[in-house]
Image (tube, rainbow, N blue to C red; front, top):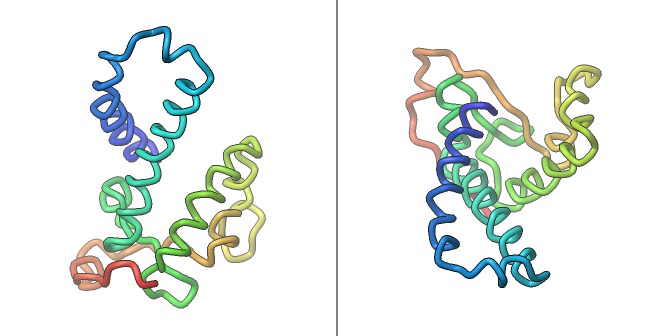
Length: 139
């Protein structure tokens, strides 16, 4: 999560450059604040869902040889990636309890894994499974 957090922070900085031209008075209004929040969430959404759908790995997950799959070991669907994204926000909103759930779950799943029907698998460093092309998100 730290690796992906750093990459996401860089993307947010890059995509927030246009806001430097926006007057501060608009940003302090309710519509301005809501727009900025939605914009920020959409950057995060695009980052995670696109990586999960294109091979099941974010750049941070690739570094640690991890892959997101469905409960049968297949590529995740677009629907499952969306549910996982929204429920991961819920996991954080519950003060991280959704992430800590992995410590008590018999299958080592987080709350958002359970809700989306996904799981993280560890790939062997030199395995063919880590080098094969995977299907894009299935509907």
